[in-house]
Image 1 (spheres, helix red, strand yellow):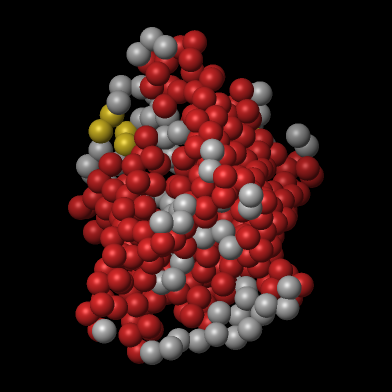
Image 2: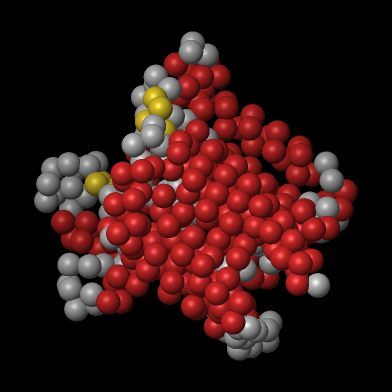
Length: 370
């Protein structure tokens, strides 16, 4: 690739990320795609339909990531999720805190962006606090706690990568390796579509399919379009316009922090709009566009002092937990899990456990107040 094409590559990657996230925000707003809401529906009402929408998105993301790998278009081992050493304590503690926090804050990072795009001022407060807490966990005071108390606890499964296909190959089941993503996806799809009520709700099916495909598109943009086998400047391989320096798909904790950082250091010409930052902006824009089209945009604020406190505490927990666990309900629950990494599966389980605990806490709190 010539130097001129390389110079324009960051713009192409960021532009594609914005477009994909715009679709995500538009459709997620239209279909009420929300992990916290899905957990609350199950715990409070026994309604699994929105949970099946989320599982459908996971299945599509796993199958799509597997197809990209099988075609040789991306190498998921070069993502942040599939390292040989699994930081299990960070995944479990960070995931649990994130799940609890997102319930207190009325939604995860992606849902906060969606609600912010509809005029919800509470979500803007959540996003600002989340960004500060996440940045403190990346590079500030919280980072010291994270790196000293949590990150050192790791285990190694004895393979070059901690994803399930590689682990099966390491124990002699090499022939199964390329088929694992498709088998897992098929099992999840059977679970999703065996429910008659879900099959009768095309809106939820649309939400799951589109969100899953957006995650797959993110892998393709970052891991293929934005990949340089030999950067002309360093003669080393490079993933263009990513904050992690590796291939990425969508996540909404660290990118919110990097968006705030970019706004604070705007005059620093070395900083650019990365894949993650473009995803944040695209999510906001897509949700705002749907709010305008559907005429559902309206300003909404806090109802009480306790409401303010819950949202601030929840945002701090999400910022710390999301960075510690390497992702949120999207970053780990979809993007990470699409790689079938062990750490991502642990983080996803912890996020759900934290959300369930928080929903039960809120029910207890309401009963006590009554």
